[in-house]
Image (cartoon, rainbow, N blue to C red):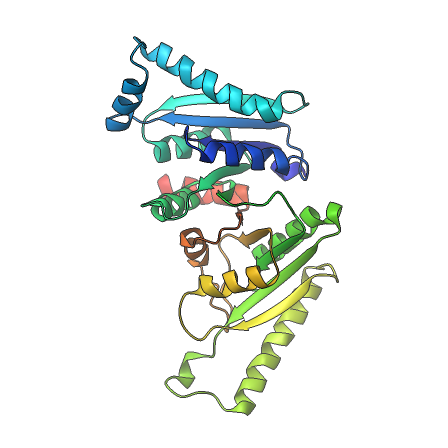
Length: 303
């Protein structure tokens, strides 16, 4: 796929590196990029001091970088020793989030891959900032990710961004003859609160959504084999609805389109992507972006 030619993979010298490098290698069997850049950021301050204590024989910053580079090269070469993909290893110093955002904007990759550690304090805040300020699509890989691409779940709000996510999902599962499950989450209009709508009102609302779904499929020429589920959200976190659907369908990946448009009955608002990055699905989550539009947005925001 021409839109995913350069990948950026973030490593941190933890056990997560093996998982992330392994999943990256698996993903190259589904999409073959031209270049993969592996990045490690040496944190300044207390973390750097702790690392220095582990390597007391190191005298200079360059020696320290060489040790890290050798360690990461060994891990990468286990999976990417012989292939046609250009492999790069980049080591920087500073705050990881700042360095990632800066490099993503200067090197202009198409896909950013990050490990997502369950229960890690601050993980959601970091992910949210990355999603907001990085123009590329972002793939969050949890610790128990499967090397499979048989079923993909795509939450949709009937927007162009959702359609792009569904089409990408279809392309990803096609080599395995897999399936795409599209999920539209809705709630009853607020003017019914605190009362429940009548059965007649419920039928009208669902009929309206069915009509929106039909128009969505026709407008964006979506594949006929994509299955749709309409989910009524009553209470709790919206992520629970997505998670339950993912588990029910044994999804290998969740794909969401960033910056969704609002629809009358949909609650997939502009902050939906933020909610998804906070949620611990235990399933890889791909946030699909229109890189060019996001770059223009960031340029306007910071100009």
